[in-house]
Length: 81
Image (cartoon, rainbow, N blue to C red; front, side):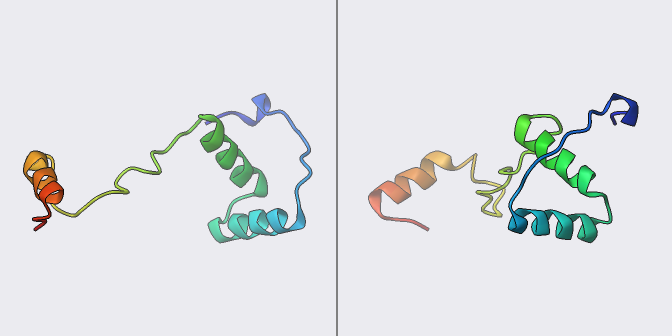
């Protein structure tokens, strides 16, 4: 966590719709607008990154990687399971 002593104040002009979304998210999470803004900027620029796509293609099956050749062959020949 960064100390408030090392923080720099800045002003950003944003559209009303983005301001409303920002305020709603801060209220929903019970944090300040500054905290939501910092988190979004850190995620965008690489500070506290999360793997947002992790698991996006999850099939729910644990054997896919072990059977990938078989699965791809079945897809290629039209014999999908």
